[in-house]
Length: 302
View (cartoon, one colour):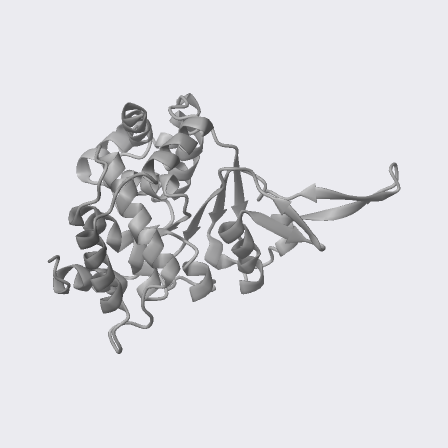
């Protein structure tokens, strides 16, 4: 199974150049059963990464372009009266897929943003009094433009906390950019990507990650980090229990991806910035990155 993970990483790296660490974090988020938020400038490869993930894992894929006039029904679906059957029939919205790209999520109103809350937490949606299960696995990748750009509605803390990780892709390095200039963007190569990990194998990976062990000393270190994040006057708000559990799960996944059956402090340190940066502050900003670094530098391992 480890070889399949490496194959998936290598395949995605063919279309998202020079971002192996970010791709590994995205895989970690998927294997941990969470949802991913990507904040960056337009044209950085956010959509390409999400589409490549869907191809490599053989997941059904839908994209929603969030705009200010998008309604919750456009996301969840709506019942339409059928004259033929003389009854209302529910027409599923694009959220009924395994990998949903919520593109530029912060350009929609808070009312539409909240349509994702139940789906991301419980894997189901309630429409017109009826609850409908979503496909498994269900994975949301949301992209957002920096809040300094015009026409954005900042995500509330309740929405941010439902994203397990928040990452930035950033500009490509000179070598990768030269390849892009010579061969064009990687989006045209996505359809040629082969499925590296099936849905069944993905489920097996997630089960194996649950068997990764965390020692008492490791949990002590984790709790010191959590307590530091909740110290008065240090941050706007500390890590929630959901965030704390997510941090541990991501550390276990990182250990599994490094072919270990136990967690070490370096696993927590590798995933912590992506897990906490959007929780300590409202958005993925430079200031929040500094806050994540403060946790690592000021909290002792032992």
